[in-house]
Figure 1: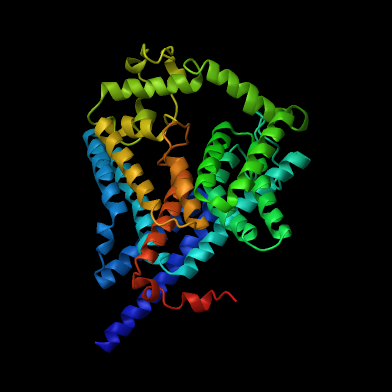
Figure 2: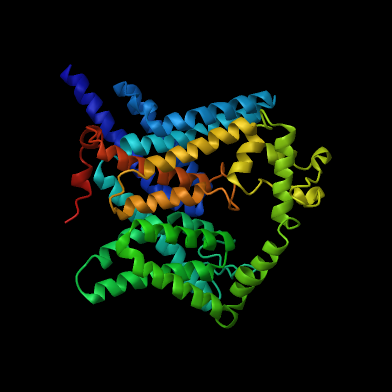
Length: 434
């Protein structure tokens, strides 16, 4: 019996180390390599399932965040099976890997405090890298890899295409808020000034990146942040004022940013129905109306949006039918994506899942900057009135479930889970912080 227990403990230790390595490497993969990201997610999932089998540990299945997600996934799989296309069903089933990632982080890898601190550092480094490369590209014309700003004026940051805004938004609050709170909470005006300056610089970076929806969502997130974190209210107010002044100065300091954020955005809002987004949204609504129960299965919009039977105009939207212009790889909105993939029931299950996650993450904030940052990230991703990237695609969904798993792990830590001290028992010694 003792020999068996020793073998189990050794396997747990090895599996835990491998899973932790996969978790800490995931932010790097999400920045630059879809293949590396998928490998990291697969490693964490496989180690987690192996540990669950080894210890017959299945309590994680009854966590409220999983109970909210599994019905949505089951309905998506059913709708994909109804499409009669086996590759579509396989893709829907593969979506389980993201739910497993969040479950593994919440119930195993990140329950102890030390792994959460290390993941926080990795996310902060990712945010700093995006910001640094965005400023280099703005000041010198090119990033470290020689890539100039995008043709529409947006800064690409460390990437070769305009991905900096959405990526920066996903790490913005978990990286910024703990550092800003730590500085502002110190005695002395110098530390507090540095904390406020950090907030101002982070907001200015998002403005100069010049991507509309990330900038709008960041502004919304800052308002919620000011409501939840009293010590940051003056810093947030100063950052909002600075952002407005910077935006007013962009015709001089960054004309491409002014064209992108102000001129183009204003014109698009004035004629939204006939814009590319308006036409795409109408196409998604037409598809949902044609298949209200089951939708078209996983990625149904991408596979069927070019079919002429969906080239219709809806009077309540007022957009032209768009023809092929209404076709894209995804409908640019998570909720429309859920509707076209799994019909109205899938849309309701998806929305219910999002609301449940937000309610859970909103518990026991107690002025904790990390938890508020994770809540804000989830809130901005779940916000329905937004143009988004594809929900099911890496890197976007990888970041979402990485942050969700981290947030749920904070809740597990509150519960005093014994696995916090037993699953990866030697992590505190390995990552000792003096």
